[in-house]
Length: 255
Image (cartoon, rainbow, N blue to C red; front, top):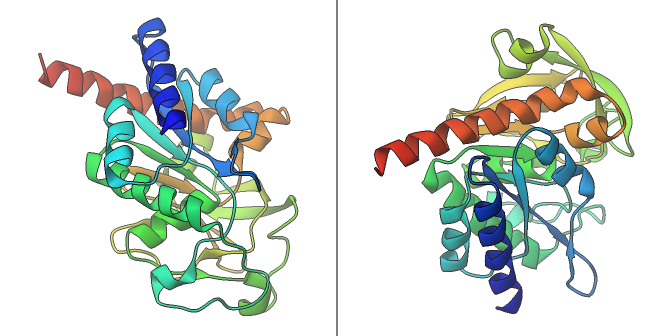
């Protein structure tokens, strides 16, 4: 409970200091000792895009998740471990599947609360997989074992993805393909009802999808921003714009 109280002290200070900027929560991983872990690339990208980043430690109850979402203007689900396959009706495929059950519980609670709130969501890598499962989809547990001929989807490799016309990525970058990084071995298999697939790799692996609320990418744009590819900041700026628009609408409605 102590880490949860500290989170709200942080949020309160941030909100008072930057009343105009959207407050953006970012889900976190854990160390072997249970400490909160998150690459600074996430917080730096959100900050540079005009938001106030707040790192969310793991939560353990629906009440905690709802309380966190109640004070945020948007949430980023970050990368990390694999999603437990029991959530989409499968057993663990092989030894490549690594799960943090504490984080899974926390992220599932936060995802359900976020979806119920209607607040903007940016889902990155594991986040894309998590939101697809939470909305009713399934995953490839291990791309090399399950998709013949799939290469370049781990270890920071780069590859091209094809974009759907009129997708957010196509509109932001004015192209039908992009070069992205890749740090994953799992991916969307059955898309959840209601999502729109907006980018795929040459093998057909889902690289991005959208709903009215969720922007999801399988790659890591925050890493590319940190490496000097400043064009990728536009994705975070669009997310912050959506968060700010909803914040303003809620403020106007509550007057």
